[in-house]
Image (cartoon, rainbow, N blue to C red; front, side, top):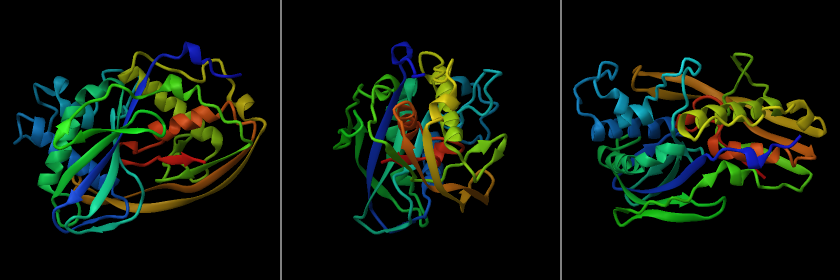
Length: 313
């Protein structure tokens, strides 16, 4: 049974690509997602916080209307949603360390979901402040060169240049994603960053296609409820086993561990997930839009700083 595209509520996904240029030497780690998110959080709080001497936001009178709290330390009043997903993701475009010298260029991405697009100017200004505070080993300063927005799967348009922000309303939409067709009999899902999925309540190194699809649909359900026009339940009335029954699946995944530094805990934490690829053959028309959606919203735990990214080919 196919998903009824006509009945889907609208939900916008605003994806951006950032280019920075180093003003001095600094080092970018193998997995820079944690570094990017940590530096952004420091910069954003510096920009918007009226009580900068306070380390803990819990007692702040302004926390319910605070931009920092909404984007970076997201909470929800819903009793049914614990650990809500953030409306903002920052992520590396690829893995691998880099030694930045004066004039070196580096790129990373960020995504805003639904109504969080209203806070785009704060995000851009915080990135500019990151450049003044410094990032990476050596706390190197950088200049924000440009920001481009994806207005379709393959088309990008510049929204920040010459120190000016020109917002564009056009975004990727869930409805348009579900209009995409895949007529080929083969599809490859390849990880960009580790996938950190829980199966039956525990982190798993043996992830199935069903696990990935369930994780995507659960994530969209919560994101759309919190930041969209209402909850989108893609699998309502659909048997996932029926969708997958004629698909042959070959997996080549392995677990990869790495360390990230937590400023809040003042310690290095071990974190990891599965990397590799999954090859699918058969009638893929029903599951392709679901997997395409996962490319944009990412999947699993720790998506806020870049885990859970993959590409389809």
